[in-house]
Amino acid sequence: MAEVKPEPVVVIGDVVGSRRSGDRSRLHDLLSTALAEVNRRWDADLRITVGDEYQGALPSIGAATAAVLALRVALLPEHDVRHGIGRGEVRILDPRTGVQDGPGWWAARAAIDAVHDLAGRPATRGARTAYRDAEEDEDLRLGMPVALRSALLARDELVGGLDERSLSVLRGLLTGRTQREIAAELGLSESAVSQRVRRDGIGVVLQTTGWLEDLE
Image 1: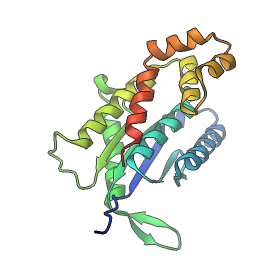
Image 2 (image 1 turned 90 degrees about the vertical axis):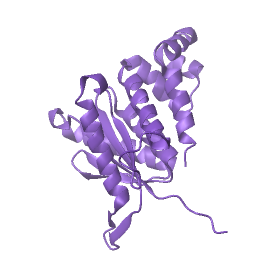
Image 3 (image 1 turned 60 degrees about the vertical axis):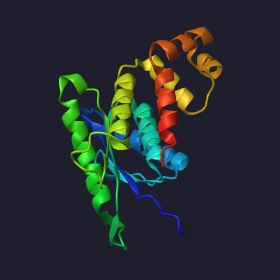
Image 4 (image 1 turned 30 degrees about the horizontal axis):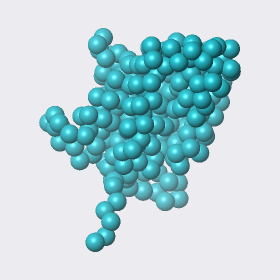
């Protein structure tokens, strides 16, 4: 029996409040560097499309959830980003230029619109990431898409509450450094780093991200 390949996974992202940035050239350089690193780590093709917006494909939902977190943590606390993750058919409209369209992209656009909507509500203003499946029933209330959206919303809230030092701890752990190495880099004791991991929910962010990254 032929293996059934999952639908493509695509991401649309933008920088929150970028028009208020005093140095847009620096913002562009920071974003370009972060995207290049994410592309290298997760075999992605994220690229800036115009101004502070970017998009691209990733090999799986899990890779997309990990990549968007890495991008956000790379830019915080100076800048924040939001993302719509979509899965569905992708069509090549122009092979020469690589212009694409299709349900996968429509789902990603619906997802980032959902982030805007959630962030506009007091109870969920920390939302920065959402997921939509192109084949998903709009009335669906159970199943993986809803569970995934819930996990992303909770992770966003934890990350948004981190101070600059805890962000540095999370950034280091996400790139594979040990707590001892991070403590030395930040001039902290290992105990202080460990306390931040527990107190600020960094351990929960890491565990959630590890589980999510296993999704296909």
